[in-house]
Length: 197
Image (cartoon, rainbow, N blue to C red):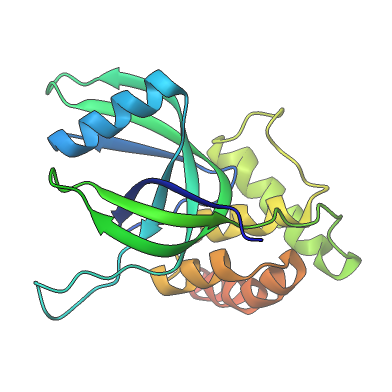
């Protein structure tokens, strides 16, 4: 039997990956209420990519998103609430309903975590490339880095590369890290070649 749960859904034009951090500025009352409830109850909310629509009255999202846990918050000089979220686990959206205050409540099922296995040898060059990139950008502490995990490596590439948002979503939807690395490899090659021109 599928374990279905209901929780708030935050549709965005960005993607949160498992183990990624995403800072957000919160100003709408419905989301301020959601954040304060999540912090009080130490609960998660879902972040999911909204689809671009030609019809402004139409609202659609993709089906696969990531659960977000609030790990830090602050109040900006502009008075807006700033939170930092961390992706925990992927989910599939089954149903979406809007409350009176405009907050979206989704019925979701948590998706099983990927097997945590080492990247195969043919991806050694990608592991080395990611190590070099992360040494430069310094967004992950040494404790957070996990170069022995094909899943962690593939999500980090999907997170930091300047990919089209639909390609990032495809990376989120792929449920095998080796297939994800195979999907990313030609894109990484293309980005590197165009940056060397």
